[in-house]
Length: 174
Image (cartoon, rainbow, N blue to C red):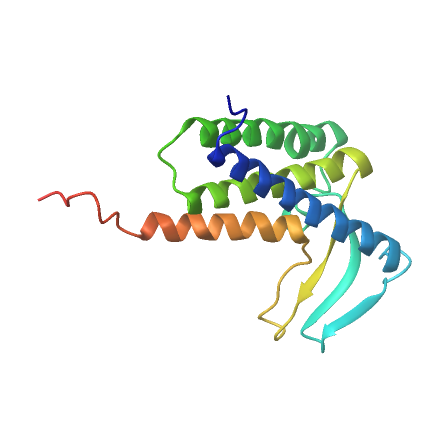
């Protein structure tokens, strides 16, 4: 008797790889790149000119630092407890819904893996290490992000694209 189906092995593989790539990249950045602090602007390493740089920023908030000014109990509730509950429901959903295709499973698994990786950081370090920054122009730029953020964003984009594609196997309503 098989312990895990091919489908479930795929889910666990994507989640595990997402967490591993994120945690390894953050450990390398923490070790090799000088951190930004209130008194130190931090080190910036050019990856592609001034367009794509690497730095070490400890983010105590959520996306783009939102929520970093919340009280400690609110941060715990909104940035630790709530995400764990939501990730648990999404994980349960993808395990139960056998109709999901592999692109959907990949997308949801990437979101779960990225979410777990960032929640792990918040739990272990009290902040999330962000390090990538893209700046094409003063108007076209990103916030500082990490591999977990990239995984979550990629998963969301895949789900959005899939939601706009029409299912060819279903007849259109007249």
